[in-house]
Length: 487
Image (cartoon, rainbow, N blue to C red; front, side):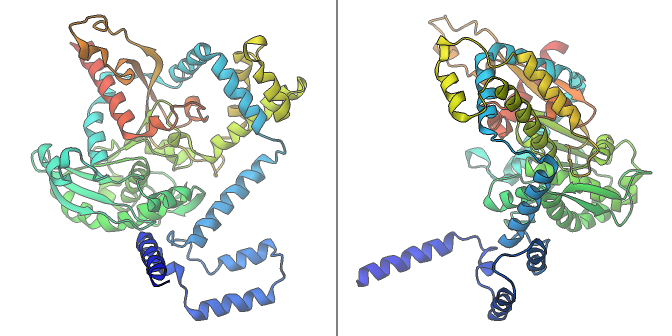
């Protein structure tokens, strides 16, 4: 019994140690608060009305993303917003299965359709559009502080000619880790913002409701608006970081003649985008810089963070870089609605064929090669997707987009021939990854409303394309392609 008790005690201790430090205070509330809640429960009926729920929400500090009640409240509001806009009542399972089956049957045609979407999303990029992106991506990746070969952040920056002057590894929801480094030679200051890598960051990510925020010091572009709609979780963390770095930027870096480059990947990219907006609204010298030469933002894999008008207004100083089918760059309420509308139309098509139940569809799909008839033609599916995109208003204040100009990198799945693959003398050449043999291209879009960014791309690469190695691989391939073309 004694040994069992010790074992339980050790288990509880390890579980407690595993709880993030920011969460521990929220696990135990003081007794007076508990008594207040008890009294409130006693005075309400067993089934709470919507107004009752809102009264309970009044106890929550809406800026405290370490409070799990706050997270639940924000997610509830997001889903309520989506349900209100959709007002659909159908099982999404069958149309989703049908779409995936169709895309699998027509993989070659699907590849061509996707290539067309990419090509129509912007103008062909030039080598100049790629200038500095590969280096800036490494600066963004450094912010994760997961440097290879045992090198520290400081050592990596030193190798690239920068001196680390600040490194904050904070792991509290609503705040972001970041570093500041300078190059005296280049007169350039870096602000690198950490992306999503912990549960704390994921909690910040999940607060994806669009909220209205007033820029109290004025607009971030001359003649612009002081009211913006933006990603709630990112706004909270970006505002706190902007408060933190503003004195360094305004009183040290700008007076010393330094240009500022703000970089980040994923959540870090979203934070970088909003920090650029906030600093420009507060610092007159940056606001007056119409070409965005004194402060630039390079946002790799940013989720949608700003309403349409303000996302476009960032074009002079912000560039978002999107890799292929990256799902995070397309994770918005607008795209959820577009996907749902698409599935609704596919479901209507299935109804016509008596296949709108899961069982009926599974019977059809189980026939495989014995039933070559397609559920629908790919052109029909494209027409459905196009209609769904057109029906969702880009100007809806709840709909957010990636900010600024957008570099959209893509490949169509084709592989370059491996000329050395049959050469027995060169065994290493046979082990060339598909990533290295992909045929890459990119386009430059004016803003985040390009059609290829306004739909969730249902593909096995949608998650892997968001990861840092995929971005690095695409940037490397495109940089090499640009170099060989110019020589």
